[in-house]
Length: 227
Ligand SMILES: CC(C)(COP(=O)(O)OP(=O)(O)OC[C@H]1O[C@@H](n2cnc3c(N)ncnc32)[C@H](O)[C@@H]1OP(=O)(O)O)[C@@H](O)C(=O)NCCC(=O)NCCS
Image 1 (cartoon, protein in one colour):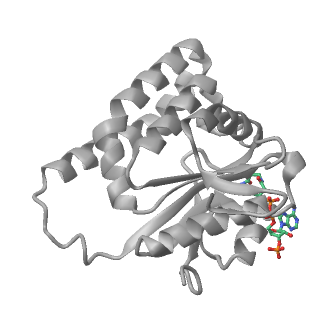
Image 2: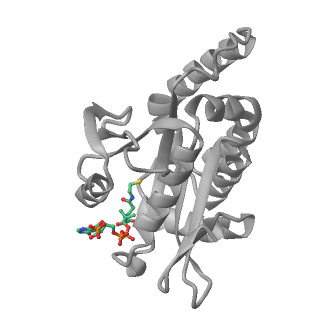
């Protein structure tokens, strides 16, 4: 058990948690492209995430019912996580995505317009990176860790679960020698932005997502974490 009080416990995500995690994700982020690809795609996405050695994933559990009431997905090292995904997750995710799109033909237009170019660029970049000889300086490079998603079931919010998930991630990132955390969230998500600011994050830059959503990129320099 990583942390816990009487109302919530945070531990590493287990494969058996994935269905509940996906349910909460789809409820909390119903407009996200991955959510709209459906439950099966999301399960594959989370399972592939768990396989990455640079990934981190926590579940928040109600100690009385042992139900998963929240989760956090992140990576401890952007470069290593991206390299793992390129090598091992591209094919299974492409298959799952294609199956989801076959069942949702109305999403093909959006996929081609908003996503396909990005995926092709990523494939090209990852292919080049794979061919590049190891420069041998990876140890020296500053490490950046990403908080991808944090979510608590609506009826369990404001009881410290989100903070406990966040702090488990920040602590592990600091222990893993990450020098900075980063994330993007929607500018309109004032609850999340306030939540992050209370935990030491600062808004770095506003950006427009590929789908036109207005986003804010936030960073956390991990001051006072990990000691
Ligand atoms: C953001 C979220 C994870 C917070 O989870 P939570 O369990 O409610 O948060 P906590 O109870 O641990 O609260 C942590 C702090 O944030 C504050 N906070 C959380 N929600 C708040 C709200 N709606 N209004 C005001 N303050 C809030 C708490 O008061 C607390 O402050 P403190 O540290 O000074 O005591 C949750 O609201 C959520 O799942 N939102 C939907 C998903 C989402 O938007 N995720 C973020 C983008 S990936």
